[in-house]
Length: 258
Ligand code: 13P
Image 1 (spheres, helix red, strand yellow):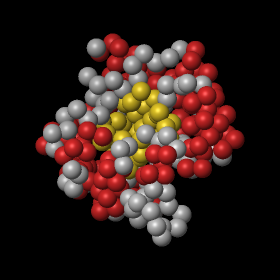
Image 2: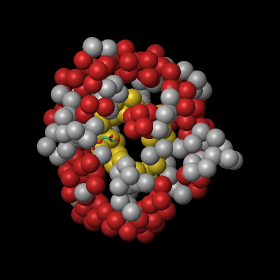
Image 3: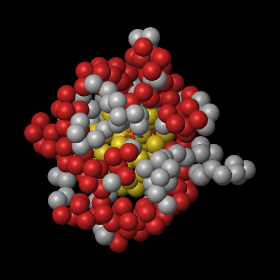
């Protein structure tokens, strides 16, 4: 059983002032009642990273810093993009790779996802590879094969030594931001599919997270029955209370299982 990892993906929310405020609120709650086992990561927008890093450092907070995306190129003519080395300099330790919103709205295809995964690992950062099917794929019953193909295409070109820096997040698109959380059985089934693929890449130690309308109301149930190693949280990570409630639910379930 792996200690849970809970990542708050703030998406394109919170300007720098709001980001500092939320980080300070998270700090108060973490200090008051630190999670025993769970690893906590905040993934703010690029423009907030520096300030969030400062709050984390000033408060000596045991919270990691994540970015929501990176460009796979080292440097050069990529207007509007941010490189892995730039993120590392800011103290970023985690990068989300291939979030469905990047794939769907910003033309990030499987090839770009694989290249980004390689760049993040090569740059010494930890990658969270995001996979998940849309509603049509799920209704056709092809979700297992679809997610398996996403995983294989991303992992195939990864050097063996880089595999240990990769975690996977299963985020069914139909559950993201909809309030329609996947059922525990659906999550557990996909955990099995993903673990099967990871085993083939000798990645049995990798964490597998769930994301999609995770809330304080469903986090304990998903932690207990979903066979996942933590959560990638969107909406509920924008308030310190609900984010920490999710962290505590995952932490408590892990403590009970150990
Ligand atoms: P919600 O928790 O808002 O559904 O978002 C999930 C997500 O996409 C996290 O990366």
